[in-house]
Length: 80
Image (cartoon, rainbow, N blue to C red; front, side, top):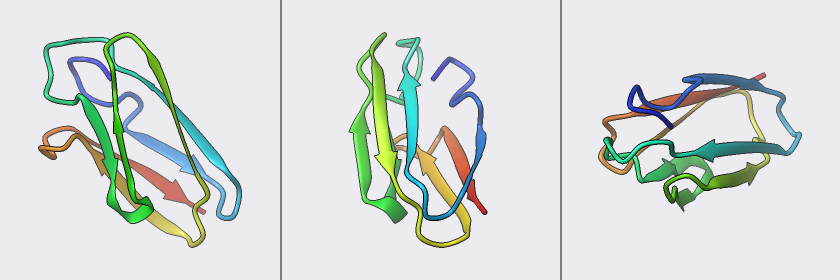
């Protein structure tokens, strides 16, 4: 997480296999202090400078979106 948002903005993963996203918020100049992915019931705080592991197993193909709580910064996980 940088001043530009989530980087990379898109990640491609395989359906049925565990996925671990590692997110490190690198700036205080953003509202993205949490990562929210409603489809996977994920709501994780992103403390400044600390890597946060977010693990889930997507069970169907498609696109999962995630964002900060204000939905100003977004990203997506493409499940194949």
